[in-house]
Image (cartoon, rainbow, N blue to C red; front, side):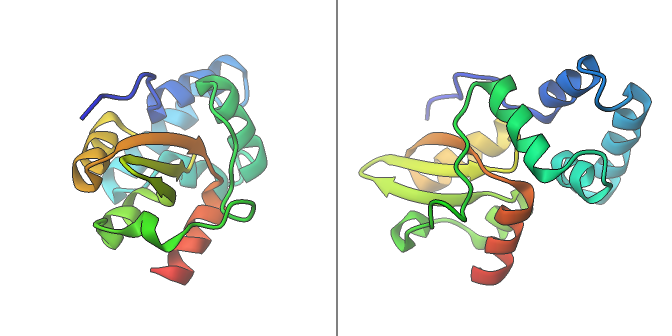
Length: 147
């Protein structure tokens, strides 16, 4: 499968947040450590910790990664998008497959995605992956309610 054309990693997003003066570097470092220990996501920690609103984080991720914003509240996922995907994998990484068209799978991410997660998703689905930025809260809510 093709690798993502853009670095959509949490570290790139975190660097941008620090450069913009939105979150202090030591706070980001602490969150990375905490997320590493708990196997959590930096984006969820930022929102749950009240450091950024969900909307603000999504907006910044769209700017940093030059990706469109498409939350699940606006584009409801279609059932066929889930075919062949492990629900636990989707929950773990807070990924919501929105649509599948032949060998193209459109997925809403919670602001960032690691290259390894991207590659595993492409392998698991057998599709090219089109990424859109979703929101942390709406992705998590949809996953908890539907999987």
